[in-house]
Length: 243
Image (tube, rainbow, N blue to C red; front, side, top):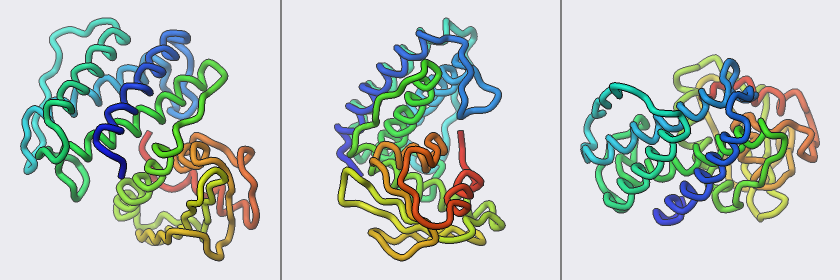
């Protein structure tokens, strides 16, 4: 994990880029989220900010706090800016280590929320930029942490709920701009991750930013040097994943 302050910084940086990109193409189709246009994406991320701000203020690690339904909604982009500012304020007031509920099976603190929102904002910033035709890389440190979170927090739990999901082999993800790699097997509801390179059915070599986007199904194989069974790499997109 990165520092609490780094997550808040990344949230602000990527939130500003997201806001700018979403305003440039307000009704563009969001390719990574079937059925959504840009306004849907803006509302989704805005609602996430609002939800977690309420959990932080509640400070209750034992249960989820209900979020009141707004009586009326403002312009989606204005609401996004307001909710981002409020979430940032709540994170700064809570400070790291403050008690806070989350939907995972551990780390019921503000640190978990700061990490989750920084990483989700970065991925959705890419979604918004893609609608305009060009993206900027996600910072290396955030990307490396994002791959770890995708594996340890999301995929591990998603496989438990989807015991028939399988990768059909082993995949090794290798960073071209950092001395980091992961060797991954996902089958029958179980996830096995080994840090570093190891023999695998297929290996993908690419930047940390591209690998982070790959594990969230935002980057295709064309961005990578691929060695081995491409079918296993293609199976990654069939593993359970949120938007």
